[in-house]
Length: 440
Image 1 (cartoon, one colour):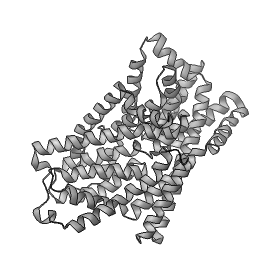
Image 2 (image 1 turned 180 degrees about the horizontal axis):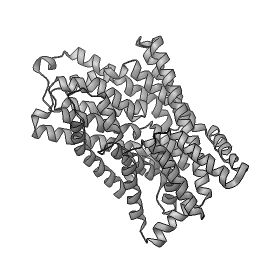
Image 3 (image 1 turned 180 degrees about the vertical axis):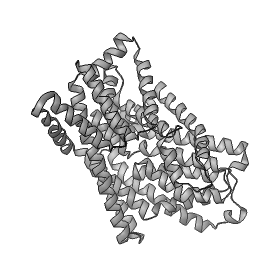
Image 4 (image 1 turned 120 degrees about the vertical axis):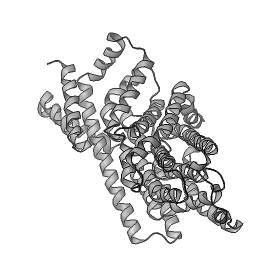
């Protein structure tokens, strides 16, 4: 059997195991280990050992538990609630103002946590009931929360970009900075869509009642101060890093400590909050480390079989496709895989194939990391089996049906597709900030 056929069989075996519901790291790691031993005997066991050593020596991985802990402290201590109260008062007089405020909330939650699931959970538990109670259209608000939560893996500190950096061997700092402008641009596009839609159809996003808008100036300022606290925490972490005063790991430690102290000073750091934050941090960090370990081992075997070179030859020599056509086909494959896999699984499955191919085609791997994150979030929200669609259904009240959720997301998917097209056409949208900061 040729090496190319072995690689295809290896990939098909892994996909079959994933379809049967096996854990991602177990399916990927087991296939990699079995094929390594079958191909190279007992010497194949060195591949997993080498991957483990590589993982343990990757210093920036320390940022992962720091940022996850920071996000859970801010979430469990209900500091994120203050953000929504601020947006509620300040944006209430505008048609669709609370929906716009929810997008702002999601941006800040993304900057605190780095996980899209966290933004979804906070939006569904804090914003969704309030928006429905105030007469907002149910399709509009479910779409807003799903679209806003998609910013979680793009706006720094993005956990997924940390994983991409490990697999693609790119600097985490550059990838984070590359996500800033595209993330803010997408948030601005969401806000513009909501504003225009609610101006044309005011019944979708009514203004607050006059009684609710009559809040004293002192109360408004108090809420503004409370809402600014998470922004201040983010600034204490990112400003020293962007200016080169601290390393990435040091900045992550500053963020975790600052969030912890903020919860203590506000009297919200209870024993239960601390225990939940630590337990969740440990669980998620271990999960990601197992996935990375499995991906590195699988990728080493796959690369050893020459699969990457075979795929490159297929696309460029046998099919005669130009680099841009190949790139577009890659993005379409992400959307298809997103119907049954999450973003992390997609990354570890295809990164061993796509990252070397993207590099050989002459594209920037930092820029491609941004394209990957946006495309996977589009896949997450694309019917019929988008991952986020079912998460929203699990969290939404009974009056919101799966059909409502499907129809709610289509306008926002179109906005995201437009953002993706702009970044593909103008790569400097993503690359300008890292080039500016690292070029100083």
